[in-house]
Image (cartoon, rainbow, N blue to C red; front, side):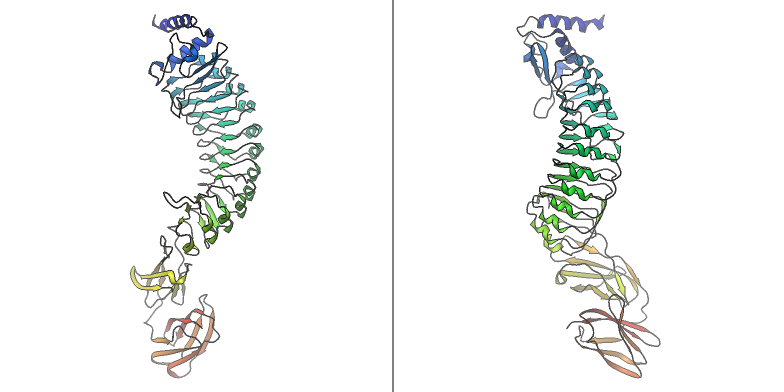
Amino acid sequence: MKKYLFPLFAIFMLLSITKVKAQINIQDSLALVYFYDSTGGPNWFNNTNWLTKAPVSSWKGIKVSGGRVTSIDMSGGNGFGNGLIGTIPSSIGNLTNLTYLDFTENKLSGTIPSSIGNLTNLTSLRLTSNKLSGTIPSSIGNLTKLQLLQLPYNQLSDSIPSSFVNLTNLKTLNLNVNQLSGNIPSWLGNLTNLTYLGLGANLLDDSIPSSLSNLINLTELELSSNQLSDSIPSSLGYMPNLQYLSLGGNQLTGTIPTSLGNATNLINLYLDDTQLSGTIPSSLGNLTKLVTLYLDNNQLSGSIPSCIGTLTNLRNIDFSYNQLSGAIPSSLRNLLNLINYPGPGLALNNNQFTFAGMENINSIAVYAPQAIIPLSNSNNILSVSVGGTPANDTFRWYRNDTLVALNIGDSTYTATSNGSYWAVATNALANQLTLYSDTIAVNNIVNNLPFAIFPNPAINIATIRFGQTIDNANIAVYDMAGRSVINKPINGSINTYKLNIQSLANGVYVLKINTNTSSYTDKLMVSK
């Protein structure tokens, strides 16, 4: 008996509604009553006039034209829903004059009824931010007048229905943040009226179809956070109206296509968190409207093109977590629009940069930490290359974790004892960054140095004074690449030796004394 209560109530309401001045189609009235009951109407945030004798056109969210319901808007306005909970009844498909349907930001669950495909007059369908699940009904492909289809932030699964190929009037297709799987259909390139295509945060795989470049009216392409693989199609660079391109959070490989430099209307470019390699193409310098450039969390190498500094509209740049190296271009100082709150708008951290060029961008960038730098050993003269102005560089040398030297402006250290050595470098201006060297073992030192060099730095003559008389030795000088530049035999017994170094260029060298029983080294500096 109980199962007949609702239909009897509905009939009673229909009889009441038909008595009001604003006549309404009985089929539409019944569909609205079922909708009210199925979605928790008594508990909506606003259910003004619903199921009363007031004209249906005065019911919250309803518009009527010619006695037929043409619009249902339960979004609540200002991005808030109207508290709908429950399921969308199949009877919604009886409202065949609907042109606008919006259930945004409610708590509707269950599936999208296939009967929604009966609403062939719809131009806008918005089901954003609910708890809808199951597959997207292929019947939506019947809605050939649709210009806007928004189904994001639900739990929809399976593939994108092939029937969508019929939706040639679509301008917006938003399926972001669901659980859609399969590939991105190449036929999407036939929907040439699209200005927005959003498929982000799903489970889509395979490659990005090059046919998407046929979408010449597209301004926004959102494909991030899927499982897309293969390379970025170069054809994406030939989409004349594209302003927003987001491909991050995928498994894309290969290089950044130089053709992207042709997409000169780009404002936001997100290629972060993929597996891109190679260098940053200088063609990106053509993107003069660019405001956001994210290339972080890739495997990019090489240096930053100086042309990036010409993109003066940039507010956010993220090159962090790559393998970039080389000197930071001074042109980056021209980026006066970088956002400085909550932090600098230029992220360079976790690469392989040193202090080279870093002093000039200290105030606009986050650049620490960086990768460990190599430590070189040439005849027990240890050295690191850290860039920057030498006078601003400070080096701390450690042997077996004990500080053994602190040098300013001198990136070398002469090991006098066996042990494990490593260095720490800082810069007075680029003060965010501390560079750490790798560790190197020195194990060929027999005694402490038995000689001294005067002066050091030397100009033309370096005087070598021995701590004791030596016999039949050999004096050799090596450059920092390990090449022999001077080799002099010593015959007889001496305490002092004057070494002619006029042929040497300015720089740091290794001076090595070989006797019959031992070898000794020290650092020789030449400054003319």
